[in-house]
Length: 315
Image 1: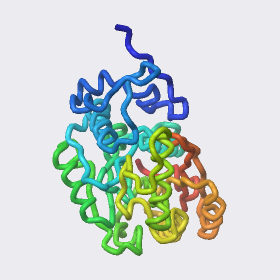
Image 2: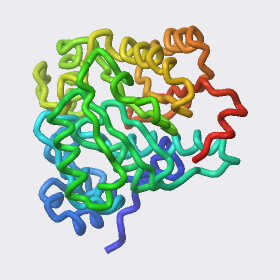
Image 3: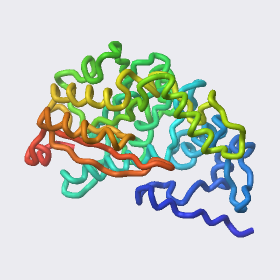
């Protein structure tokens, strides 16, 4: 039987392992439990139901085993189950950003230290950053259950034990305060901020997404989230813009302790206010366009260091 030819996903980063889609033969071989979710669609291509939360989670398990050597990964019910190709793209674009002040060479190894703001229960950015480039991470979250699940993932995958440490943010009003200590130096921060400004807005948005994924099914206003999401992962007061503005103003208090502060920005309409806020704190900033699944997104990165200081940074 001829192997399935998977179309190239040209919107993904050139180094992204998932540019050629999901090889379900290989994935089910490495993770047999995925087999119960795989079927052949009308185009004669193997796939899964991307509106089914159990299928999405099992696909993630299979990808982590097959491509990232992570053999024990799980998340509790109702926590965000991240689409791995998009998360891997953030890591690859971040690597390119770090290379700009390192003579074009991507810095690798444990001395590259990232700070993941809102690690969630899935621990995905530290897992990918460590698996792909050998980076170390501190992961923070306001949710104790999320931190405890990350701890379990780390303990069950010994190669992560020395690479990832965790710290709960005990005061939800702050982002970096209580986390960045005077002696800390971070190469970068990484963040997928809460997108919505209320529970109601989050539910409506998810209903639209699920209805788009299953156009022939009856419309729903109370959807089951295919990628899940705990309240703090999906919304906060002020939404994405409020969270990022807070992050920018706090970052200005640690100008020499982090080379690049970065965050995903989903809503393009938020960019002008974000740029204005960055100019208010005299930050040098750049925007990296990227695709996240079906939608366009971007990373906004900023630093308080001059070009000379950036190049003097020790990786």
